[in-house]
Length: 494
Image 1 (cartoon, rainbow, N blue to C red):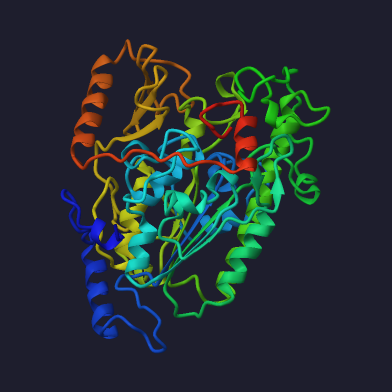
Image 2 (cartoon, helix red, strand yellow):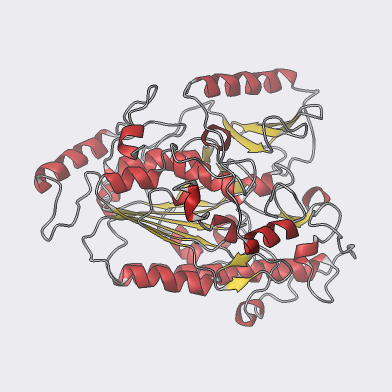
């Protein structure tokens, strides 16, 4: 079914700008551009941004960056970007795995709703509407450059499914293989090269949606020597850890992370930070070219991560996808607004602004829609172009399928966070006093726990659209070997 038809499904309503200034600017742009075309046939945006540039980084923790307080030199380019952006300090992914998390980001709905989970083998079906489809059908160019092997396109006979939907260019060429598994990936420099080759064909007035997904710092942590040198030896060695026979990180070094001769956490933490520095350098190269080609000032630029990584918290080491601990689902989120929106904005919008209110990846859908002046379903999120976010908002995170006896659900409103594991008693954490979630206070605040659960149920009832079932396509031989190497029959990515 064409995505233009899917946008009119029952229960959906067009997104409308929340800021009068944005609406007025959009109207002026439409009037100035007539039929929406610039000279030379380039599509003109009807919103304050001429283009959207989305950069996501795999396995990047929110607290491992200089602008977030990390003391080591991991992120000079991101730190500089933060100084001219809005930093959302309390941003949440929908899941601690790549596929489900990015499915939510690209659809503005949660993984269960769009068939985007619970594992990395499950793909969204064709009827699900992605933001790339909305943008493409409005006349914009769309391109994606991905570096994680689990984001490779399924075989052609599976159809247009998964996160590839809506991208005219979906570049999933991999140039490397994980050290300990038959899983393909692309190094950060090769990913930047591919994106820059595409940008070389873009003019300064062209409207497009570009998504670049970097694989580093996903393990095993094997950064280039030049990025490891400034960080090697900066963490204490720590206790000896057993080398795992499985890929789980609970109480051990996961098998896929094991590096020769390294059996204590310190060297792994050095290498994780060096991988972050490697990504940061390549992001700097990408941003430099965007500036040189005059493609940045009229863009809405978003930088985030699909999920984080456990680096010893709760005795989980060098892993993700096993729990909903905060280091796995709290993510960095930087938004650099287009110049046409930030000039004279009141209240101030943009440079060096910090927002403490909880936000999620689902908020990027309405942000993109409003920035480009498009029409689309509202979906789950709230536009980040507005001056503030409502009180008492809740955001959920998910792990495992609805029928799994070990199903995990977490719900946060920024102050409190409830963690509901089907096989365990519910837990509650006070994020203001205990951001690392070390002390369960459910017994002391049962009314807060009940309130969070009730608000979550009300929130989910607010969108009654039918949920889609995931598609699990056949695998080619290399994909099959790689997923078998994960040690999980469901193909989870760790």
